[in-house]
Image 1 (cartoon, rainbow, N blue to C red):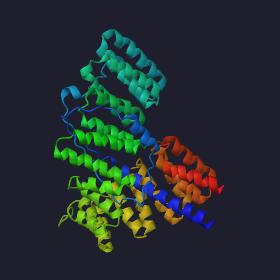
Image 2 (cartoon, rainbow, N blue to C red; image 1 turned 30 degrees about the vertical axis):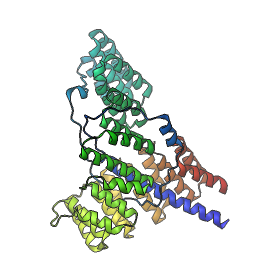
Image 3 (cartoon, helix red, strand yellow; image 1 turned 180 degrees about the vertical axis):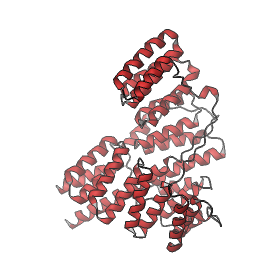
Length: 450
């Protein structure tokens, strides 16, 4: 019996680590960098064997700590040739009328107006009809009518010449992604790749969407394909950085280490790399990575925050606190810097001040899911399980398709003794990601203890 209890507690510990690791993905997902194009040909779709492996391969991150940092969004845009950019033109009078009704929240009247606009556009020719279909599809997306949107988008792509399909597929994929419909964006990213199999950015963007729906290994497949296509060293290094982040979050430290070594040796890459070192208790290497980023005379808030993280790694906690305070003095509205100080304070055991900082960061940016999860973990440390569950629930509201969010809340429910609610969350995690090992084990353990 004692052995079963110990196994159960260890499993809860691993769940916490997995949440930290996957929030690490969230903190750094937007560091993704589409690469330049102009590379050899390749097929566009994953093999069925890859998808099967995704479903069946266990993913159990081991002892990965929550990262202490957030990086700015780093984006290298591909060179946009005219034929690669799809331009919308919703200037038709009928469309303007429909859009005005939608802005007034008159959805029924707006829908009827979009329908009339399509009837009028059909008489004007294919281009007018195309624009009207795209406008109505956008209306459907904003009102969560995925069937209606997909029907209009499919009709639209049949109206364009083959040479415009890359641009239109790119436009539609981005529209779905912008609304958070990552699963629905995937076929359109695949159409984009099929229209131009040389598109490195097609693979990297589809990889980004796969990560958003818990398909981490398939995302790695796409990054591998992008890497095989890349010619420029700079492009290869940036793709290696994306692979390293995923390997890190999946607990494959050996591959993560190798990919980080092939990543760019500049900020913000070194900040992320230092987190990898820190997660393995390789503190000196983490310190050395930070040392390359530190300026002798910091001027900006980000400089002081970097120095604070570096000083904390070196055990200079009083100096680190001063640096974080200076960073926030210079940028009091920067939610990222406030959250970074919160994590520092939490590590120092200053829970009350950490809680104030997390709450302030959330007030500054209320729609960032991982901040609620971070505050929830702090609340768990304080023993405030009800408040922690409320924060985990808010993170789920913001990211309802992320399986690991349900695992985290399930673990909190378990600690509170709410077994059925924990089972419900594990079941939802498995519906989203049938191969999710944490959810499988959590479900099995709860069944054994009932």
